[in-house]
Amino acid sequence: MKLRFWKVLLSLLAGGTGAFASVPVRNWWGEELTVEPSGIFLYPSKLTGYRGAAVFAGLGSSMLSEERTRLVYDQFENTIGEAAYADNISWSLYFGPFAGVYRWRGFGFGAGLAQIRDFSYQYLKEYLDDFYVKIGEDRVEQSGGIWNGVLAVGYSPVSWLEIGAGGRYLYGQRRLEQVHIRVPETSVVSLKNSIRGAGWQAGAGFVSRAGWRVDACYQSGVRFGSEDSDALRKLPWCAGIAAELNVPGALPARMLAEAKLSGWSEVDSGFRNVLSVRTGIEHRLLNRVRMSYGFGVDPLFSNSAVHRLLGRFGLGFDVSRLRLDFNLQASREELDAGDFALPVEPADIRVYQDRICLMLNFRYDI
Image 1 (cartoon, rainbow, N blue to C red):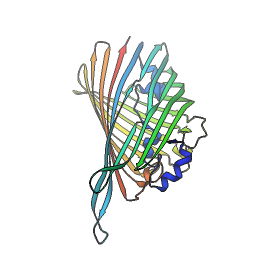
Image 2: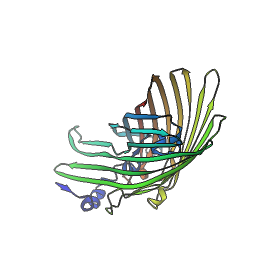
Image 3: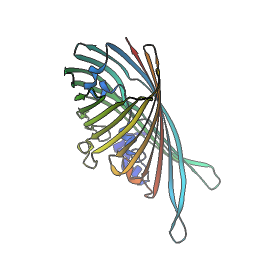
Image 4: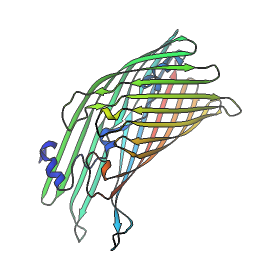
């Protein structure tokens, strides 16, 4: 039978399982996706840097591999290793962004639609008796995402200064189902949340003729207006700064660095504000071929001791007015029992998450 979460949470937790308890906190709030062009979705001051008009489209895919282990002890209660008890792989596909920009005199206009968070997550653990006959399972399936629609405008009052602002509308849905089977009983928790909210963003950019620029931005938090305890009620504000330096030479390069501070402490009193850092280099190998690579660190907002490490590699090709960009991003994160939406049992588990994202972006200059 199907039951609402608030009716069965206590009984499920008493049995060592629960809908929220089986989802890592970062997956519960949605995996944050990288969205380009940043001039529309994060730094509106960059809109004046385009020439004429351009349209953008994209496609992305993500694979999440998760291994859960328990510590193994000897007869003297010394830790001698780890034993895996669940190993899962899940896939997700997302379309976008879809965007357009237009430059007119000192103004730059931009509009876009993109998925910014992905709730896709799957977990399965089977239980066998002494004769290896299946007698039960724990299964969690979460899906959905949050989309962001943006209208923004930028203006350059002088050659070295660019400013911009825009409005955002976020919408989406999250669906979660947990099945808890123990012969002869079955419990099912089913949740479905709709997400609607609006916010704004603003920023400024400083440009130098020496080949460098610095952009700063602020995105307001977005409140979704739901009072349900099992729903997302708010996403945090974000303040970012990005630096770019063009280095001429036999192998021209563009050096990039970015830092973003997210205000998770206003979303939940148990969370901390986190500073995410990215750095990278783009080389122009030939007139129409570009190669980029970079690294990053994402702390977990519920536990500042947990850091996700990221690596990124990309290739870009210019074909007349069309630009194609292929990007591959890989990350790894290690969690424990306290890094879930609710603590899980047993307390000595270790969870290893590896994520690979493949993104294909198109840009056509009109």
